[in-house]
Length: 201
Image (cartoon, rainbow, N blue to C red; front, top):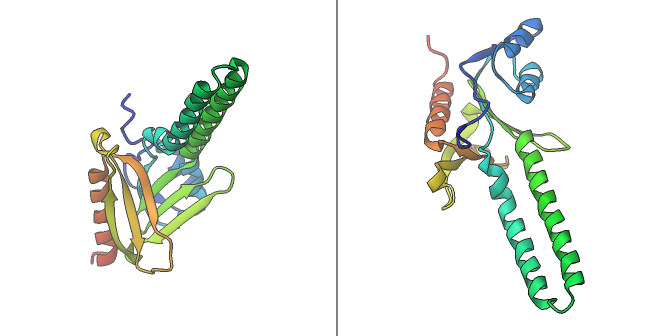
């Protein structure tokens, strides 16, 4: 399985209705439990879900990389400075390994709780390990979007999509570390264009 492939992507538009119809529709597509919860409780009546996806699995490594690098450098420094007292050095190294393992586990939890949703009306970001945080911006109120790619993203065909609302007082959203960002960005732009044009007559 390719780790760069977007996961939990919906196979097609999904219409959510109030009541049991919405629940049945949600169960009829391959969606994670978080997406099903969102469909039942947050998506509005008659709203089409165009796309659901999670960050690439590389999100776990990228969000942990800086912390782990610092801890590793400290561990190496302790090993070099405490060569005459190997017991103390071993204790510091064990603590460092536990810190790295804890940071990676936290990144895994962050990855598991993060979900991106595009509907025909809104763009959403669901995140938060203990407290759910929801970024919700109507497509008609998006000023612009852009792809943000770092040096480590390009070889892996990864990138992030920045979502800038018209209202400058609102926070900027970010679909972070997604696979094939150009293709996903085209879908987002097409949905924004349709929403701003209004329903066809």
